[in-house]
Length: 545
Picture 1: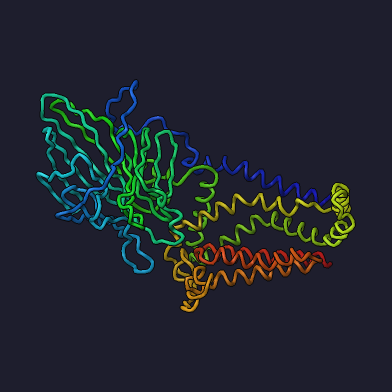
Picture 2 (picture 1 turned 45 degrees about the horizontal axis):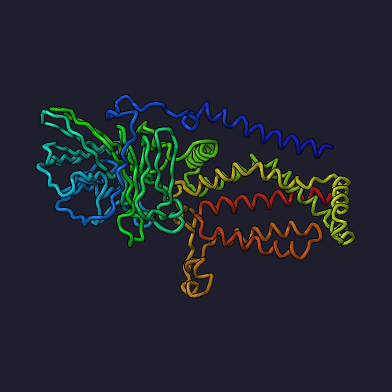
């Protein structure tokens, strides 16, 4: 009875945490639970819209024209080095000066087009038109064009000092005595770079509508042109560590994406942008439209500074809030230990201590089930006739009741821990804090630890594709710890041949899955495995008394 009472208390406590947690998060992290906004900020100028008509969606560019630039200008701030090309006055590259590449210690090149395709802020109505005048300052560039309709178009690229944001401004003047209308498409994001490998899983083209609906598409799947109608809030890309996205501070009628170069195997030629179906420029008047481009780390702290909702691209809800809470704890531990490797180990220990009652109950239940397993096998041998299946089930349940053992006791506590594990996996896998952070022999906690390379491994079937020739020590230690854990588990009773095979196979399979995972993530689960081994040793001693 006492065991059942403790088990029920553990379940009740966990459910209480899961119920109370969102209420606490709403109090301290309201941004994750904020209701959809009905209107944008007051400074967003909207073009007039006929509510009774549907916007005429302009198809994405069906074919790519040859793009060439004449002059390039470099704009610099404390955060950025931005290259703007003529004649289109579009952004050809963005380098993040404060974030260095782990391997080269050079500024991270977030996007670049190699001058082979149009860049950010490319405007289709200016194709083939040369600027009449230009002015380039250290952190701002202005270009003026004239259309055949006598409209003048001024494009401004301005760096936002102190924040990860670029300001793109489009000023259209109508010097004639009649109002004029035009429609256009504008590139909001392109030229995104990737480090390859596991990072490619997180390369997504993201469109966020004003009603908070979010549409995500893996960038590798983008081939032909596609359009998304609606009141567009943000369009761009999210990667494992970074975001490159544009938000129009006016009414955009649709978003579009396509791959400019079908032969390009990288993601640089994928283009995402916005379109305006009808823009009215009054007689002897002008229209100013502004786009904010976020180009920086995909962290809530940095994305929320602009107060424009870019952080919504990270997702909302309990998992997102829990991941952010775990990252906050990781940063706090780093402030104490001054090393992210030690912070990850400390985080693992803290979470294991928090989940200790459930883990203890789960492992103890599994031990108790193993103790009665020989009697279960005897019953299976006695009632092996399929006709006796119901009788066999009754006898097994009576056996469990006799030994006061709950067959679900080992699974249910683990199931209740899953929200924490899922949130933790996402937090560590995409934590930019681990990017370039070293620990012991590990040079970069965001990559496999790669103790050394053995060229001969590349020539071996299966091993070559699995290891890329690298000897990653942490997954091997994890396999050894898992084997030891399985040995401790199997030593408590008889097991079937199938169970023994699984006990050998599972650690190897687990090691193969984790072999090319980031070292920080493997370090966490290695610590978690060692902690579980300690708990099992304690349980074993208590059962032997």
